[in-house]
Image (tube, rainbow, N blue to C red):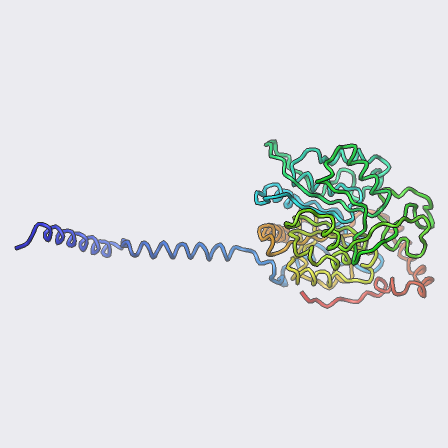
Amino acid sequence: MTTHIERNLRETMTHQLRQMKQSHKYGEPSNSHRILSSEKAKDKKKASTKSSTLDLTRKCSAAELKTIHTHLPSKYCYGVKTKKCSIREATKCPVENWLTNYIQARTDIKDSFLGMSIGCNKGDDAIDTARMSSFNETYDHEKWLKALGPELTEGKMACGENSNHFVASSSSKPKAVKKIEMHCIEPMPDTANALKGAAASLQLDTSEFVITQAAVSLSTGTAFFPTQKRGWFASGKNLVGAEDQTLASCEKNKAGCTEVPLYSMDDYVDKFVKSDGPIHILGIDAQGYDFDVMKGGSKTLDRTEFLEFEYDGYGNWIDQNLNDAIDMLDEKGFSCYWAGHNKLWRITGCWQDYYGRYSDWSNIACVHRERNQELGQIMEQTFEETLKSTDPPYEVKSGSSLAFLSFAVLVPCVLFTVKKYCASKVSRYVCPKPVESTH
């Protein structure tokens, strides 16, 4: 005799079996099929996200190298005509809105933003960095230049007084002021004093905007820097804001020079930097000693998320090669790019031989691939967008060709005259040798 419970159970099972048959008949998935389909969709989404991640370590294709060369043609990039080189024209005064936007949108900096400007010079880049990272209106580009005075700024701003490397957001939406620790390190005695005077007149918080008179290079000790103009044609000229003086300026004659502290980058950080967190932005403009600064800062580089340095024909860059610097940074986990006006051309993995023969004013931006993957993706995306640009190649379009021809004739004569004295210094430019690509 069938009980009431057994009858209900049989009816329920019959109903479920009928539903399953109808599902298969009309192609509708059962619950088990729905679960499997959901898991497959998740796996597909993960695979899609992974595939959309840009690889900063991949080598450029032949087509990409050709496009880069089209944007930055090699003509004039070695020999005596490098001031007309496309790389110089494109990267001498970079503007990096992509970096500003990223820094201002960050919400993951728990303590304080940490930035360093080595070779701070007039301090405008350091002020712009402080402003964009803190939202503190005290750090104002125009007010800072005005506080420095015309003696320091008029005719001495290489990129112009109105040129902002990092442009703070113009959004009207108020944002909370963030804590920062920004180091402005400048060795030139007159310039360092002017920076401290400007900071005092604007009543900047010197516990967060730190100005240090010191040089940074390969090792720690002391170095001499001039307080009077060195050279044949400008004796006695005020050196406030001068950008053509280097560690080598007082090597042969220390008259008119002042001894200043010299630190390796690691030693400077150990002594002066309070934060033990990541260095969010590290800028190096050491007038030809940039690679030496990096060599003396292995531990510091290991803490750095974003690095920007200047590459030119001054100081020790004369006997060093950019290829070696890019290799070292690659081993440290950095991918590097030529930095232009909101454009980037990757160097790491995209090396071209004429880069090794070029040596003039230019700027290179690097991101640590592991320490800041988000910024790395932004920079690589900017690179890919740059490659799609149809803008004409970078080249110098102004200037007298006759004057340049006279200069081109005069220089070989001068080089021949002083060949015995400086052959080791100029041979690289007169008879440049291609650098083998290792990227």
